Length: 372
Image (cartoon, rainbow, N blue to C red; front, side, top):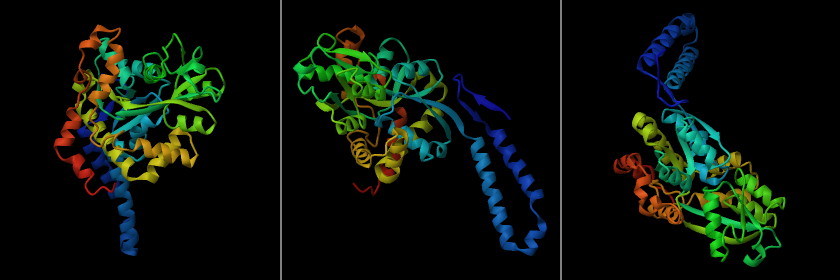
């Protein structure tokens, strides 16, 4: 068997000669394993057996041609929905990819894995992608994913004003991550100065942020769906909602990987588009996937989470990154980073694969006759 491997670990694909060899070998085995007397004694059983063997053959050959790709994701939150759906609905496999999803606790380890080539594609928040690029990494956003974000600054039940929060602390994931950026926006809307008026405490991820709030280790935490709904049900208070065009969780890779493996990236983007279509058109299946990955059984919270995340405003069918959303990331960075002042949204994206699918009419055809 000849295997073609890219420079990236975790990426391989079987090449042409193997496919031909596998097909011929299996057919040869089928010819001599098939009991000839069965065809004479019971033709129907013979047909059923033959079809079963051929289906097994087809599956074996198809499996041999799948390209293995390790994909990272950085949060147990609804923004990861497209990758979860593509995996569980078999969409990746349909497009020739054998994807292994790997969870990292926060954007920093996920970004490190992307840059070290352990995960050549990753679901990452916009701030991590932009910040890494500004520091010289060749990271790039190839699909918008979640382009409009909504997080709530949740506080303890006894804290219902900015004055009561002043002097306290708020849980974030890591400095420079999505929760950090949005917490700073929320605090400024409340008239508070981040760090000076409210300390920012790093946690490893969204579940840990909520746990710290529930345990009384912090006075507030910035939470996305469904954790904000869970906290609200437990009696915590929504101090402020931050909903704005913001390049949240999207699909990231490196320009090097695109150059060396354009077909893998193309297949991944096609899978992303098809997974989002499935999310929008198969409510029951989508909610089952959410329940599995979020570890939730509360039907009300699952439905509220689905209703928000499945809207075209949040995850658009055509999956172009949101320029305004990237500008909202660059604005606070520009206060301390001269490069951010002159940077443009298009510096951080590569939309060639989305554009191919869009201009071919594939996406429009996919949504043809869609019921809204």
